Image 1: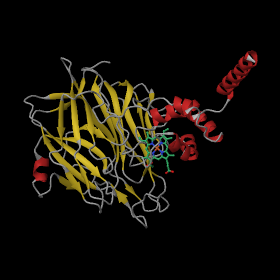
Image 2: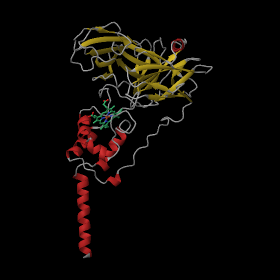
Image 3: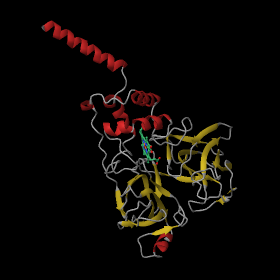
Image 4: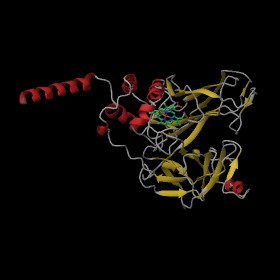
Length: 415
Ligand code: HEC
């Protein structure tokens, strides 16, 4: 009897091992860790994604879509094409992970041992980079009416530092993720935003377009869904000039309900004795007109880099009709470097892309931009029906074509 029991045990054990090695992937062992790491930043209660992927029943309910969207490369959302620049904070599944999800779904989404699911990651609303050196909230809690067009509202935050400061990183924490679409922290050194603020009773001011309504000397970065705060290399900082105002632009969606938001901003200052200033330039074309109906209209631009420089980050920017943008650099000796390629532009997924390693661009390097726009009636996001000619402008329904380049001078910084 005892021997028989032992044999059965052995048999069961062998079977379990065989299943482990050759059987289909299970939720508990294979899928949960992927969802925890790559999806739950957005797919959890109160976050931007339309549904949660926090437990087995969520995952099972969405198994087919999860497999389809990951195989199509649509989820997790990450716009830069592979092989054209290597970026920090990339959101990309490995081929093995994609295959594992596909196999799991094909096998009927088996749970595995649900008691063995790894503990859920802790998402806190606290600061991801630790306590900021300087933290500031929007001056008031702002109320967003239920209906109407999206609103670009600007809140002015005075800084009272009595010297120029260098900021190594900025972390923006949206107050109410249901209504906050993105936040950009602009800098104002001429008090222009304060004048705009004085124009109406409400806190801050609105612009009709996507810009801050004045000539900003630059930004400190911002926040958009899924964006994790990027830290500049040690020894590099955004210059926050003495006495400057930070103008927090918040793009609000309407949700059909009255919403309240009080977003906040944390600054981390450079701690090095000398800090190199981060410069922002761009390859830009503001003289184009997209003919009505043109399905693939090309717009180009270029920018010559005048001094030896390290490129740290780039940000392509277009509005609704943009379809793709490619930035590349050609050095004076004819060497070509791919900087970034967004093949499937989406106005709702914009980001500043920070390179894993600073990219050396010798003086005289030409950065060129090639973009395409779809101003045809077949473009589902075309705001004009029938299409009309569209040119440069601040409104979301106008267009832009900019490749922002964030760099430091090589004379001031070396990696
Ligand atoms: C950066 C935020 C973010 C991350 C990370 C993310 N998603 Fe999403 N997901 C969204 C948003 C937002 C939507 C809604 C559609 C849209 O806006 O693109 C969405 C939609 C989806 C849909 C489409 C549902 C439908 O039928 O409309 C699926 C499936 C999905 N996500 C699966 C995943 C999986 C699986 C992962 C991880 C491998 C993931 N997502 C990672 C934000 C994210």
